[in-house]
Image (cartoon, rainbow, N blue to C red; front, side, top):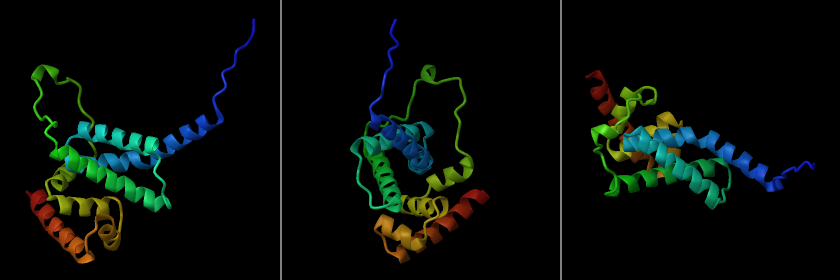
Length: 167
């Protein structure tokens, strides 16, 4: 009786390591950003999976880690906008199709709901500045807006959030 040993190609472990790195580095970012756009945790999970698969299969070239993160943010934002524009997004589900299980919602869902209710430019600026820690100049560069526009959007967003969260 012979022992048969299956040997994976040498690049398989490198691909697996890269996949783990990408998922660990960006899944939370993609989920949170897409949730603020789509207001649905399930849609955000689907979009997250699509973005990660796109990143791993298309293998875009990045100059550095910051460029890679900027690509992820822009790709997620664009994919969310595509979903919102498409007529394929159905909001109604038959009652029988609904699950009895509870859905795990992100932390601070009241705050996330309020952020999600903001206009798109304000929502994107708030997410990038407060959730991801980018400076106003970096947010301006990532979104293609001026620093003054980003600062004004953040100011308006803070005012709106104060009103919404105080009741």
